[in-house]
Image (cartoon, rainbow, N blue to C red):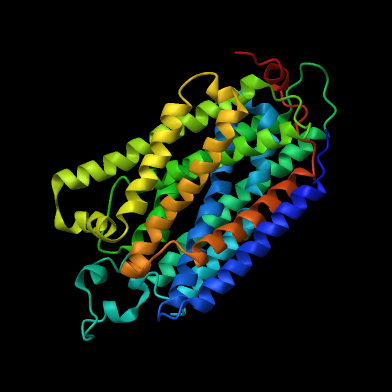
Length: 403
């Protein structure tokens, strides 16, 4: 069945964008502090990263399905392909933040200031200078362009080949050569993604707190982007089902999506606590500084985010029926989606805004605006192809999935 965006959906996205933009403008114009510009760029990084990595996680999950020859998810391939479609916009936002930082329009990345590398300067920072072989502007941009370029190539390839596969005229029982190539390309992508999912988080987020490091941070950031993607996929599937689309998706498919949302929420919670517990237990000064500042100035937001993102999915979605019921799935999904956005916010604000960071009109407005754009882009992508892939060798098995 072909999907068309309803007037209500268009109106909802427009309202989100307009309300978000107005809140952003009001927040910026009423903030008379010296850090207004820094606050704007920090929030642009938060939302650009959050939604870009949701698209990236959709690409990862699609590749994972090909590599593992996962049958149940075939009926939702188009959902993840549509989520991938925001990647170019997110990439432009991130690159704009990086270029502005290199041009010293903001100071989100303290290590970009040449004075901290200059031994003659009063702002010289020996620790940052010792990391200069890795944390320097040319190498940072080379890495970032490689990450984004390769990821977007794979996203384009999977989408293009999936559309081509729909047009093939195959005999019963034939397996398309596109499917076989997709498995190979999935292996290549996951091999590349295995390292770059962590290194990009080091570059784009962890380097904000240049004096701090964590060997678990890459995995922690990865689990956050993955669970956010699964949450959005669940909400999108439930929305389309409610509008009479995706008749091929049954309660068992929704159950499986709910299981992924539940499982990755547990993974994220485990990594959050593991990172905290190991650093707290070792009590090494250069490691605990990350948590000391957040507990001193952002304690309610930081700890509250953990409990919301852990307790709600863990206790409410543990049962089989809850994972199949929109009454339970939808509100929990929406709450922890915001919770994981707040998680990214607490990664960025303390290291960029210091004690001046807050959750106000600027933060809420930017989030609403990006959410509206993201939803519109994803829904528009859904209109450009059938909602269910054709000629996939496991489509019939997926159609008859039953738990």
